[in-house]
Structures are given as C-alpha cells and as structure tokens.
Picture 1 (spheres, rainbow, N blue to C red):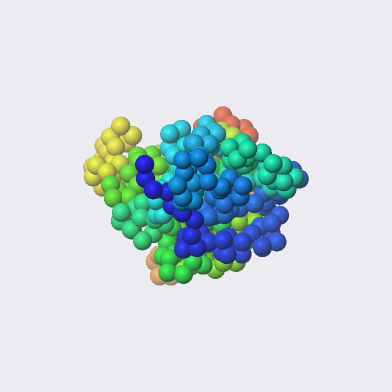
Picture 2: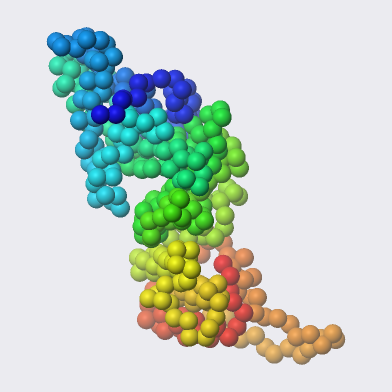
Length: 403
C-alpha cells in the first residue's frame, strides 16, 4: 500500500488562501442554501476534521502515533471509497473514476482537493461522544461536493494544474471551481494556466456554461496523446494571468457572461441557450458537437470523418468546416425577413454598393437582452424550418457569414 500523505502547510491549496476566498461576502452567500451553511476544506483541514482527537490514542498492537495515524487515514479511505459516485450520481463520469478521484490526494501530493461539507455544530459536539469509527463515518456522510486537481496531468504542460473531477449535490460547482482557481491565482510559484476537459463536450451543457462563465475557453490543441485524448470531450484552458482575484469572485457570483474578457463566440452559445425553445436548444448543441467532431477527427486522423461529412467538390478541410458551420448556424439563426433591397446605380467610381455584409451589421446591432429569439426561430415551427432551409441553400452562393 502506498504511503499516505501527511497533512502539511506546503499544499498548493492552503488554508490561508481558501479562507481568504470564503471571506468574500458574496461567496459566503453562495455557501448558504435552504438554510444550511456549507464550509470548504482543503486536504489538511479535511483530514483533521474527519479524525476525532480522542481517536489518536494508540490502540492495541500499534507501535507509534504515525502508525495510528496511518490506520485512521486508511479508515477514512474505506468510507470515502463510494463518496465520489454518490455525489456525482448518474453524470458523464464513470463510477470507478468518480470513486477513485477523492482518494488520490491521500497517496500522491501532485493531487489536491477542496471538499464542501455541511456545517452542523450540534452534531459535531455529539460526535465527540461516539466511537471513532462511527464518528468518521458520519462526518464523511456530510460531504456535499468536491473538486480534485492534478499537477501535470497534461504531459504537454507538466507545470500546469488541471481539473481532474468536480462534483456537487448542494454547493454550486462554480463556487468550488472559483475556490480552486483563486488558490492557483494567488499561490506563490504556481503556474497560472489551468486545463480541463468537459466530458461529452456541449452535451454536458450545464458544465460547459459554468466553465465558460468563469473564463475557460475551448482549446483543441490539447486534444493530444500527451494531454487529453478522449474523443468527443472538449479541452478547455484558462490563463489566470489575464484575470484579477476580483474577476474570479465576480464571475462566480454574477449571473451574466459580460465582463469584456470572455471571448465573443463562446459566450454567444451560453447567452443564446436560455432564449431558445427546447427544440432549438438541442439543435444548438448538436451543431457545436458536429463541428467539434470534425475538428477532433482532423487532429486525430489528419482528415475530417467521412461518416459525418462528404467532400463532393474537392474543397480543403477548412473550407468544408466553414461551409458546414455557415449551413448549420443558418438553421439555428435564420436571417430575419427584410424588405428587398432596390437596385442601385453604380456610383461615380463605377463601384456597386456591397449589400452582402448586411447580416453581419444586423448581428452587430442585436441587443440580446431584448431579442425574442423564439419568435425569430419560429414558434411557427414548420414554416420557419422550411424558410430557413431554403435560405441555407441559397447562402452557398453568397459571401460566407461568420459569427
């Protein structure tokens, strides 16, 4: 059995930084739900919280306090062994992976963890009177969420931290993510770049929106054998050097995606999703999943997957991808009906006005907060679909529209 990692003060996620994060008033509000207050613990505080002081006394056959301590941590691991899958539930994560993740920091310091527990002072007092095994088991049952990080999971970036797994039942995941990023941002000597991969990519829309909101961006260069290589997952990257600590706090506690830093194309997906009917929400997800599959397929096989896309015209892969993107996005966001543009005589320079950029101008002037997208996308579903398909085909001859 691997030696257990004894709590120490040199962990990346320190008690000082974590306590600094939770002292922000807006974060404190996020740690209260339905009258229950939740607390965030780093690895050291979690281990010390689990082990009652009375249980450290030597038992028969134990030769030292170190041996006693190791036996107690083994007991924690026994009870912790099924917590991962219990909290993650039926998500995009395999049971074995979920159960193993919270135990990793106990055997290797390249892993670190933040645990969310429900506070209960009365129960804490009662536990002091119970047998240490019962006390540990009951404390483990109060875990309501966790995030596990790994240093060097991506071999392309051995000094970068990545998010190995995040699951929660009560505390919002973005609060745990914010705590993890806040500690990395402020920890001395730690690289400020962080990676993760979204299981099932855009189909895991809740996770994708949460990661985007806090600042992660799609970055397929990390779809690689030396990094993340699960086909159909979405690699994402954040550079915390571009954010202040206040940026992180605001992104955790705000309800918007508009802070001027999140890239426009990514935030567009998140902004529009809430305005769409369920049918068009599904279409939006499928569009972006198709595009991702083409991209990952090209990186993995040197070509786009033939099962997803034809190449009847001998176009280059990039041209095919852009054409497909135009076609699919026009199905989701059809051009609104406009009055026909009258023919205009050439000006004195002999140049005809260009009306092909009209849709780009339309998009630039759209106020999403006041736009009723369902009305545009067709509460008159059949008519809207037929119209959008006709326009999609006609657009092939015109200038490609970029979003």
